Structures are given as structure tokens and as C-alpha cells.
Amino acid sequence: MQRFASVDALRGLTVAAMLLVNDPGEWAHVWWPLEHAEWNGCTPTDLIFPMFLFIVGVSISLGVVPRALAGGDRGALTRTVWVRALRILGLGLLLHLLAWWWLDKPHFRPWGVLQRIGLCFGIAGSVALWVKPRMQWGWIGALLVGWAALLCAGGSLAPFQNIASRVDTALLGPLVYQYDATTGLGHDPEGLLSTLGALATTLLGLRAGDWLREGRRRWLVMGGVAVGLAGLAWAWWLPLNKNLWTSSYVLWSAGVSMLLLALAHVLVDLRGWPAVGRSFGVNAIAAYGGSALMVYALAGLGWWEPIYERGFASWIAPLAGREVSSAAFAVVFVAVWWAVVRWMDARRWYVKI
Image 1: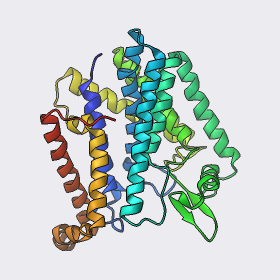
Image 2: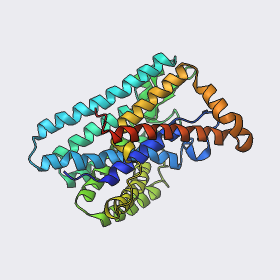
Image 3: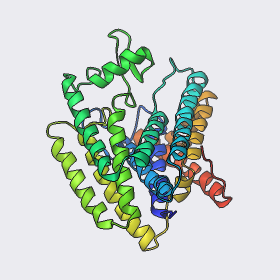
Image 4: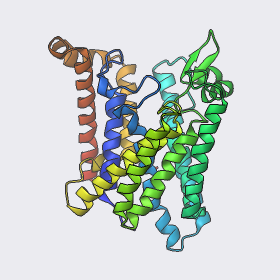
């Protein structure tokens, strides 16, 4: 089974970017490049999560599919996929439970990033094992068209009024990410229905992974251009929107991801450039979960704000503003975890679930 250093590097850089945007010094002052679009639109930050799900699909193609092609028991492989998927989902629930208890959150939130990753990994892994490649394109098309039709049939794409928000609120009420008790309206960016779009992103990664494994570099480039342009064209009718993971957003973000994968493959695998980010990539779970626990500990002990104010804002803010001091804190946070995963990698310590 061939391992591509470019995929490890790209996964690692994506995890590092997740930590960068998730851990500013203060949420009241976030540097604009590290902010999500308020609703419609797509900033560089909005490309990070779909990039990770895209790489999940690529990794399935490189790790799960070759075992099936080599004669592995598909039933056993499917069980292995779902055991890992449920572990990822379970870790997400555990982290949210700890945040609720440790940080005195107003409620426990069932949905989340790891929960979405686990669901997409399980379903995409099953599709990879049981659905032929040509039919996988049918799945992608059905998800894109079906999700777009469902959104339009819902009558509104506005915040809290769209069908995804209404369904999540009907199922979980005040347990969604945002909830207004006075109106009874809520929204969760990692909710149930919008996972349809996220699954399409993962399946596009699966198809791109096949191209990479088969050495079809031109297909990656041409596919990235075609898919990205299709997403921009679709955005004239259905806006790019990460919160709803709209079909246009799926295509646009997947197109960018394909081109970045092609670039990383050429530079790292073919030209021998250093696989910057690899240490994050081979210990993605340790970095994401461990950094979350660090945030909970620092915030729960009351240390987060003093560290930020005294170590960063007190001298950076007067010179460059609080947005820059907030971003500087995030950069140092990532650097600390970069050192941790480099140390783990040097000792061949890898956390797998």
C-alpha cells in the first residue's frame, strides 16, 4: 500500500490551520483573514474544514480501497471502517461533554466537527467498498442536486429560517450551537441535513484519491479547475455558504482542494520538497483532541485570559491593535502544538482511534 507524503503534509497543514482559526486570543477581536464569512460567501478560513473532509476521502482511497482490491473481506473492512467512525464520533461527543462540564457551558451540544468527520468517514468508507467508481459519481450528483433541491424547497436560505436550521432545532431544540429562546429558532453549522453536502465533499475526495493512486495528475488539475468553476457558476443561483454546506460551496471548495492536492503531490512526492506539516498529519487526532483539552484546561483554570493579556495584548495591541495580538496568540498556540507533534513523530508515537 503506497503512502503519499503529500497527503500527510496537506492533512497536517489543514489541522494546523484548524487550530489557528479555532484558538484566537480573544473572540471579540479576530483578525479578518481568520474569520468565517458571516453567512453567504467564502473566506480562506471557510476552506479549511472542507479541505479536511476532502482529505478524509483521499485517505480512504489510499488506505481502505487497496485492501479491498487486494482481496480483503469487504464485510470485515466495513466493520473496521465503522468502528473507527464511531470512535471519532464518540471522541467528539466526549470533548463536547468535557467542555459542557469543565467550562460551565449552558448546554451539551451533540453535533460538532469530529461528529461530522466520523459520519462522513463511515459512509464514504462504505461507499468506497461497495459502490463501483462510476456509480460513486452518481452518488455525488444525487447528493448535490438533492441537497440543493431540498434547500430551495425549504423556502428560505436565511439564517435560522432555512430547512437545515429548522430540522436541527426540531430535533434538538436548545441543544443546537445557536438558539434563541424567545423565538424558538436555532442553527447548528454541523447539523444533520447539511452533512449531506459534507458527504459529497468527502466523496469527491475519494474520487480524487483514486486519481492520485493511479497517477492521473492531469485529471486532478483538470478536475479541480472544472469542479471549482462549476461551483462558482452555481453560486449565481445557490450562494456559497459554509453554514449550510451548499452544493455550490461543495464544488468550489473541492476544486480548490483538488488543485492543492495536485500541487502538493508534484512538489513533495515528485520533486522531493520537505513534507511541511507531516507531523501534524500523522497525529491529527492527537493534535486536535489534545489542543481542545489544553483550551479547556487553560480556560477552566482561569489562565487563558491572563496569559493572553500579559503575554500578548499588553504590548502588541498598543503597537498593532488587538486583532493582531489575538492572531499572534493563535500562531504561538499552533507553534506549541507543532513542537508537541514533532516530538511525538521523532519517537514514533502515533495516536490512532
